[in-house]
Structure formats: structure tokens, C-alpha cells
Amino acid sequence: MTGPTSRAENPAVVTIAHGRHAHLEHQRRHLAVVAPGVRHVVVAMDDPVLAQRCGPDVVTMPAHPEGLPLAAARNAGVAEAIDGGADLIVLLDVDCVPGPRLLRRYVDAAARTDRALLAGPVTYLPEGTAVPAPAPPGGPDPFEHLTDPHPARPAPPDGQLVPGGDPALFWSLSVALTPATWEELGGFCEEYVGYGGEDTDLGVVAHERGVDLVWVGGAHAYHQFHPVSRPPVEHAADIVRNAHVFRRRWGRWPMEGWLRDLDALGVLRWGGPASDELRLADPGEGGLR
Image (cartoon, rainbow, N blue to C red):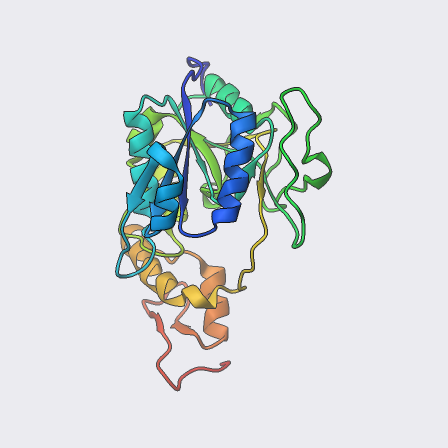
């Protein structure tokens, strides 16, 4: 971690979405209060309804035959933000509501670092949890009693930075970086289409190019509940395809936990870390091994 650098004066938030309209509305309502005047670029992936709702800051992205173009959509949103003069980019998942200090802490962290991916803690809200109304500036933190960051990632005290993060833990749920760092990384690899792999890939790119992963205390985001499958069986085809992209690029398999679990369920066939075999199970080949 080096610095300090100049303070960001024109940050922008980039969110990609397909559906999840209610979640996006909660996010937009909170951003309007915690970051008034900050541009929010929304990339509508194959979602004409959303494209009509989000006004001039929407970027439309057509469908891809193999799945949602998540990597390409993030790249398009960031390009739009940078073309608009943003000097700090905050990627925020459509399910995430910003805490009251998220933007402020990212801006502060950018002024204290250089060539870094800045990542704040994310709390997964339990099922049935209502998203609280945003508090006015200087008011009490409406999320204080809900804050319980994901245990697999560091959550430093408010205002503290922890450099040297494990690049395997990078995720795009909530991350900030400067346009210069984005250009150095080259954005997300658009060979990844659909679910899985593109975040892991960018974490490797950052590590290979000496771009640090820095955990930012106080930059809290709150992930709104939605049902998920564990393991994500409905995304098996995407996972197989994207895992092959990653192995070709980096010489190893990503998402080994998912591959192992999906193999055990008979959804796919994986020969293990040292094997070249990874494919969807053939019809009639399912069932536990």
C-alpha cells in the first residue's frame, strides 16, 4: 500500500442488473441519501423494463446466447462512468444496499492507497429482514443492529485499512478502484458468460500485476436476501464453461468446492484438481457417486 494520492472528487457507482427491480429500488433510495449527487450507472442486461425506469444513466446490454453477460456488463458500466468523468469507480451488486459510510470510506481509502482494489465488508441479511429506511446525514446508522459481516472476509474497524488481502477472496459485490487501476487490470475478462469465474479471474490478474487487495473498514454493504441453491445446480452449465476458460488462462481449476459438490451430486463429472476432465453429466448418468 502506497500513497497518499489525490482525493476522489467525482466518484460513480456502477450496478449491473437483470430483474431484481425491488432490490435495485432499495439500493437507489439509499444511494440518494448517503451519496447525493453521485452518479449511479445501471447496466440493464436483457431487461427492457429496467432500461425504461433508470433514466439517462442506464446502459442497455443485450442477451448473450450462453447466459447473462456479467463481465461485459460491468465493463460497459465502468466505461460509461469513466467517460462521464468519474475518478473513482464503485462496483455495487444489485442486491447490495450501501451503508451510510460506504462511499465516504471508499473515497478516504482511495486517498490513502495507490494501485489497489478496495473492498468493504458485506453483511448478508437473513430471510424476512426488512431493509430499513435511509437515515438523514448525521442521523443514527439504520443498519447498526443488522451488521454481521461475512465471516470468510476481513472486517476491519471503521476507518482502518488492511492491505495484503488474499486475491482468491476478491468479489465484485462491493469494490472500489480508480480509473488508472481499472485500465491497468484491463477490466473483467469477457470470455466469462453467465455465473461464476470472472471475479476469481480478476483477482488473479490483480495479483499477477501487483495490485493489492485492501479491506476497508466501515465501507459496509448489506446484501438483501434472495433464495440460492447450495451448490448452485441451476448454474452448472455456466460453471463448467467458465471453469474451462479459467483453466486455459491460468492452468488450474477455479471454484473447486462447487466442482466437488456438483460432482458428488452427479450434476457434472470432474476428475479432480490434476485432471483435465470437467463436463456436464450425460443424461441418465446422474445420481450420487
